[in-house]
Amino acid sequence: MRILFMGTPDFAVASLRRLAEDGHDICGVFTQPDKPKNRGHKLVFPPVKEYALTKGFPIYQPTKLRDGEALALVRGLEPELIVVAAYGKILPEEILNTPPYGSINVHSSLLPKYRGAAPINWAILNGEAETGVSIMYMAKELDAGDVILQKPTPIGPEEDAQALTARLAELGAEALAEALAQLASGTASRTPQDGACSTYASMLSKDMSPIDWTRTAREIGCQIRGLIPWPCASTEILGGGAVKVFRAQAAGETAAQPGTILAAGKQGIDVACGGGTVLRILELQAQGGKRMAASAYLLGHPLQL
Image (cartoon, rainbow, N blue to C red; front, side, top):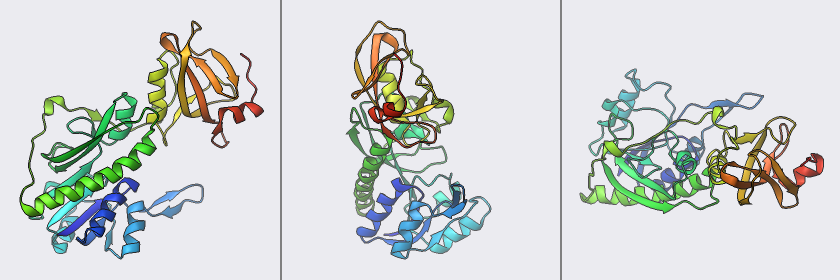
C-alpha cells in the first residue's frame, strides 16, 4: 500500500520500521522540525527523521498544516493511506480525508480511556493494572475516531513510563501491521468509541514533580514511575535542594509522620508516607549530579534520622 507516514519520537519509529519491513511504499514522512538542544543549541533531528534518512524516504517537516501548502503536498504525494503515530500536530480534516483509505492512528492506550498527549504516563500515574494500544480511524475530535483493533497488555509493578513506552511502541507496530492487512482485505471493523467513558491524558508539567509524602507509598511509587524520563518526581526532604527520584519500592509500615526519614543505608532510604506506609528510595539524582543508587548517594550525603 502507498503510505504517507507522520510521526516524531522514538515511539513512532517502530511503526515506520514495521511498514518498511512489510514492503509498503512509503511515499513520504512528515515529522516535526529539528529542534535546538543543550547549551550549544545544536539542531537535533527527531528520531523518525533519523530512521527515515537511513531508508532514503522523502522527509517533510512543515511548521504549519493549515496554510494550504501541506494539503497541496499531501495531494501531490497521492497516498492511499495516512498512518500517524505520535506526530505531535493536529491534522486538518482536509488532510485526513485526502487518501482513499483515510487516515489511521497508532495510539498508546485502550481508547476511549486516555485520549490526549501523555496516555502512557497517566496510565501509570493513576495506578492502572493494564493499558495497551489502539489502531483507529482519525476524526476531527482528538483521539475520538472509530477503533479498528486494540491490543491490551499488563503494566509491570515496577515498569516505568520509559520502559512501557518502548514496549508499547513494538506492540503498536504489531497492531498496525494487522490493521493494514484487514484494510487491504476489506475486513477492517469500525467500532465507535463510547464518549461517556473517555478520559483525557493531559501534557506533563514540572508542577507534577514534587512528592507529597502524605500520599501512600503505592501512590508515590506510581508518581515516580509515571514521570520518567521527564519531569521526574522530586523531593527536598534529603537536604541540599530538590533531588530527583528514579526508583523506589514499598517497604512496610510505620507510625511515624509522613516525610520522616526512617532509615538510610545500603538498602536505600526509607521514608514514612501517608496511611502508615513506607517507601524505600533506591535510585536518585542530586542537583548537578548523576543518577545513582541511594547507597552511593549516602556516601557523600550522610543523613540524620
